[in-house]
Length: 313
Image 1 (cartoon, rainbow, N blue to C red):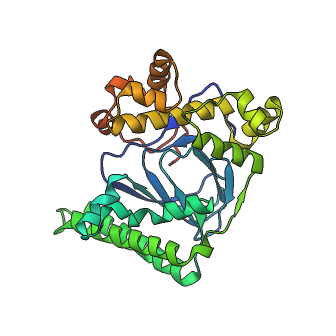
Image 2: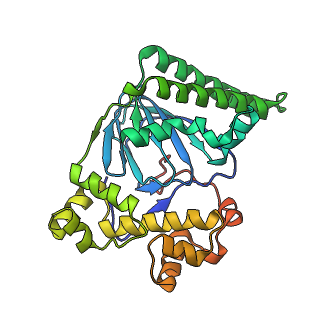
Image 3: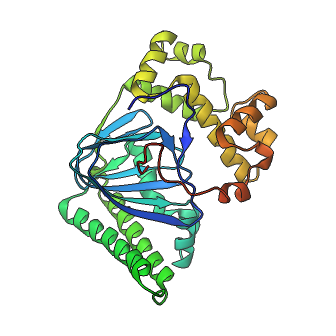
């Protein structure tokens, strides 16, 4: 998973719908670019030899592993076995959780359908693996959603209440997944390969995006040579410390602007001290000036789910 520092990180996929579902069965080697999504991603890995690298951690997947990739997490994927690489992929727009919970009469403030991501963050792992019975049941949920969506595509006319049916099945899938995560917390076993120092640096950066994050300051804090730190960070994550900080600050500022915060305030909250430099960096990364960015801008983007090599991301 080589990273070219001359290329900017790319956002892959813009959802103009509530969710997107794929069942992909490939017979080729896959190596995606480093990228992030503006939505949550759930991957149900079925077979093959594949690895996910997410925010400094690398996971070698086993059949029936479930990968949880929150929005804005920078990641890359590689499948080294060209014989077969099969998985389900579910993209979820942030609003879908509230919609389903409101539909079910629940309190959307509880975010019950995002518990899997919350537990994963607490456990500091992106992969969960359940017992055989639970995994088989979740697989059936994915298959039912696939069958429902395919029946709509293959039919000459829209089946009765098709959109409602698919959303009910999706809701059931998310409920079962989150219930399993809550009741089987030992399933969140640490399976990643990582450098402890790099992970500590990533955690520190994420918690201090609005503060001073110079290379010298970070190196001093972790009692490490800045040149050694930069080399190890690049080797472990694929990108430089400076690039990582800039990327995360732009993502934070973008989310703050979308939530209604004035662009000037968002720039300060995300660690930029010069508004002109912030505008240039923001436009380079998102393609829009901060003053142009909002729900209308985000929702008007084309939906793209392939990288430059034609791999699903």
